[in-house]
Length: 334
Length: 296
Image (tube, rainbow over all chains, first blue to last red; front, side, top):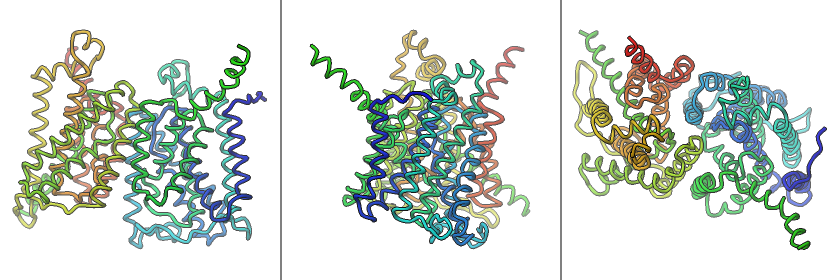
């Protein structure tokens, strides 16, 4: 077991999860229900960090896998009349992982340049959305569940074990526990040899290849893992909201997550989690001014962040705080 | 006789698909091939051209041809502005350029939505149509096929015969050496980006009568242009024309039998499969053949 260093980042991570467990004691049911969705968005952010921050591949595929996860959960849970919700979540993760593996196989073994990965995944997302939109015709059925076209699927049963339904605060706590598990999983990847191989690919693909790493395989594997995470987020969203629509496939769903990863620092998961949470909270507070401008603001923030703070705001902040005690004691000594 | 009509209809459909693919992809291919920048906002630049045209025709009563010209110029200027403020800082940062141009596309979509709402009243297709057998053919679409041919030829001559073409090809091959020989590579890049934007504006304006005018209409172009550029590879002209023709054949055929949506999915699948077989696209194929010929 490696020793944990108590730098600002790790302290913030502990505080972040501690706060998450304390919130239900402070806020009312309605607020907590809303918060649950924030943490689902954070899951998407983490899945983007894995593929973009760790491996250096920019992809809009998260929207595809998120949508697939949401639809898979919806179809299985509706078809089983709410009795197979846990298997539905697992199936959602599996379908998303498989789809990511297949798409990743073509992208990474085809040695497509990074530039095109973004557009390919975006096109796939657009086509999926279009496809789902035109399924309103009754002949589009899976397991006897009509796909519903533009209106999507409604009245999706919530996740349940035996007779206990995860709704409200119970669902919130479930999401937090899942997020905690995912957080440790991502942290483990970050410190493992697998993670270091990914960083190697990010910094220089050719060099990694020359060292004997199977770059395409590693990329496909991490793409599939990140797809699975997005699928999980999709399933949780479907259970939380009770509906899925074709626009769940649209790139716009993952816009917030992408921007937050870019702004917070794409290599830093704690910063990303905190940043995503803060943004979700802000948009909720500013909801009165309408979401019309939120996309506009997101776009501007994204451009400014990438141009001027490529390492990320949160990373810079953590660094400042890390060196602060040293500076203070220096001043006192001098 | 009926077979003859069918053949004419098939050729028409094929050329319509091909010209759309080539026109949609040309600007993006030039920016990607010359500057190694993937412009995710290319579709939104086309949307900008289309909006300018439609607004000028509908609200100012401007003649269509003049409006198309204005759409082209406005988009070119906007592209120049983007290059000055943003793109210029990203030369050589391929991955960041995708993210930032995507940011530009979000802003443009939302800005247009805020200014003009979810859609605009379209303009009618000019020049009418004629009939061969029982099928009617649009004169305007046939003109677009002609415009695609003229543009490809024009750009071929531009890159082969002019000084700008020579300098930009030099920059494309090796930026450092070109600039050591006194080529102002920044200026070449700026001009290339403006050229790509102007093309986007022109194509957006030209297709304005044929499409729904919405803030997200650019996404319709993006899939098509991406597919063509990916299959075409780095050579902006030869690659794009070959890929456009091949994919046009697939899309045209599928559209006739199964409708446009299946046609669209078809070319996306073909594109994803073809990068597995031809990683450098048709350009790679062309280059390999020309090298082989020289060796002989």
